[in-house]
Length: 354
Image (cartoon, rainbow, N blue to C red; front, top):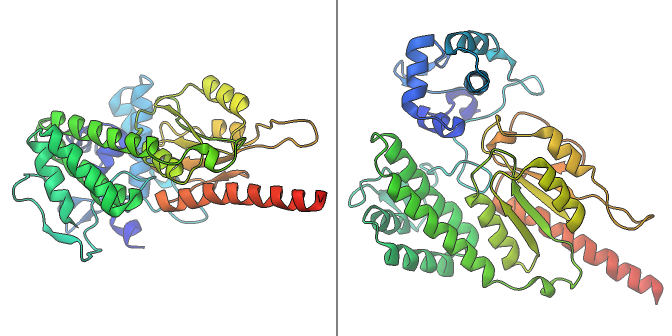
């Protein structure tokens, strides 16, 4: 309820839309397309309906509609963002696989430090102490230090904790820094993203092979929907699946619909994970199509479970054969259970045959 009332910040909204915070504020001043309510009378906090309004503004302007006309149409549609009789909770989500990485400021633990800004110049907030060293190394552009710190984080805390409580919060802090500094620190974000991607891929390569599960186990297909470029959360999931000995096929950013369809038909996956960062890229028709794609021999045809990953999918009830995990742990659990159930069916079949 707290998220519904208070909404998200301008910076979080800008990242969601793929524009700069300056652009969002400019639209507010020029076209009166700001949030319906301002917390404390000053700070902008964007409700789910406000977010839907700005997404519609982006969609219309991208299709060639003049900004003033697009703003007018978007304002009229503000009240349309409802599900099951209430607004979709959009507020700052917890750091995890299927959300924009954010900093937790309400969940301290023994491994956390105070407000970690000294030495890094980044607005880290209340995060684990390891984030401070990672942020400092990123600002210094110290590649060897980044590599060592990421290796240590993965070795000490494991993949899920390292991603959710160390990598993602630091990435988010760097993103907020360059957004508030006139596009400075872009090089810091690029370097940090590269080393996190490298660390995740290294973790995947060093994990068990798919043969540890079954020589003929179907893979998990991971891909960004068309026009979507964010891949790091999918890389975290791929590493986690490989760590559990499950086979994956990573297709990366902005995969065309036709290519995804071909990949699913050719590989016969147990699950397909589709990443969408914003509603403008979420393709529900594609998700339904893939969930209904059957393959296998006649009489034993099957279809993959489709997992909708990322904040772009919020606001609509998943169709049959489609799931929407809320984080890395849940996604790993959902996929692992698929393979566990398959193994159980094979054992029962073998026992019956005996």
